[in-house]
Image: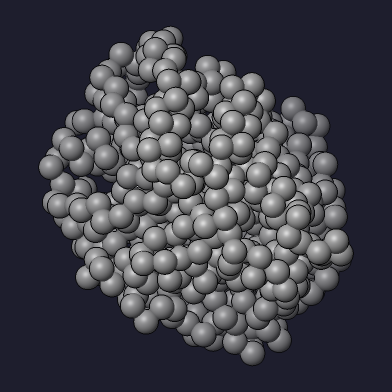
Length: 580
């Protein structure tokens, strides 16, 4: 048995455990320390994945660290967003790079010099990592793996594709914002890289900041807002960031503060948030699709793996799946930096095995890679919270009945999901017929959201609900892509259909999550609708719940109708007729 511990200690830090090439546990630090997308060495997550794997620190054979250049933060802290970093060194570095953006963009030598200086500011990391691991009891050899190779490998190794082109795209990591890799079982070729100075992901972050949200955290709000606007300002972005000859180019030569100031200068005084969001969304699709189309053709491969924070953009992912050049698309469920720990572990494993994982292990069937809790553990927490509860003889059927009666039901069951999406085990459920739910339920959860809630859909009904593209099937299991809805879906499930006619589904089958599948199935028996609302179980600006105590606290604060937690039901039952 060979055990590889994968760690990311930057944004959204976390750890994974790879045992003989199989991903057996994956947890991000935020779920444990309750600090959203926390930054710093993930001590809690390291201990947790070892616990989940039933292993001790001494069982670890190798530690694979994601990213070669990273500021060492010895103790995890809250992530305040790109423009509010707590690090003094980071703020100074961004100020310098903002001021030098034009010469940096004009002279490649200047970029290389800047990168050397950046590496020097991060020199304490290796000693700090070794010290932190020793304190935990891990004394295995440590290797460091390039940021974008980690993104690309995480997606490819778990795509199930025999061969594929794997494309990463984000704000930046290890001095780059993109890699393009051509992967096969035992070979890989790096086809292209793009310097982080030319990141279109950064421009999406600038818009997030200008609209009053936290850059590098709240970009999803811009994606949702875009459907309400018109791309009136896209020509401004065409002056600043563009595609040409297989590359993305920061032709405006602006970065960080200089980019923000330039955008403020170019925008009209009466610019509208929704129109700015629509403009950057359209431009992202225009530039990224040209870039992706070019490198898919160059690779000679029609299976496409996507990773990196830009591919949290579910609308862009749909456009990629619709390209004539692609057959099948897989987006890694933990597509942002929270997922590169897995890529580092696979990179190390690939070196040991001189190739990828065995064929039967090469597709990620589900993302339930975190902690689960027994009914005994759950009941102990319920007693301690002084709540009225009862054990249900059939919790799935009772939850379905509650949903059909118009109740909002929080669900806590099974292994916690890896990545940013709640996929049924740490989820809030509701029926899909009420189009006003997005407004009133988000208000109750203290959220400000523009995307509609996502639909959890029974497998086997895809063509009834969506203009189905079989090439999207693997992505649609993980809620990482939008699909165009059918008229039937728009009529019967308006709560989960966005104003642009799309929805971001999770296709649920009985094999990967039998309990959640049974809830939807029993709801369909009552309503004729094979879809329920699924939104993440958390309060505003808090991570998705992890433990029973997290779930109880969030349920109390949100004042939801019921909590289905393990085999127990909290909150008032229905009367004997199944009515309120």
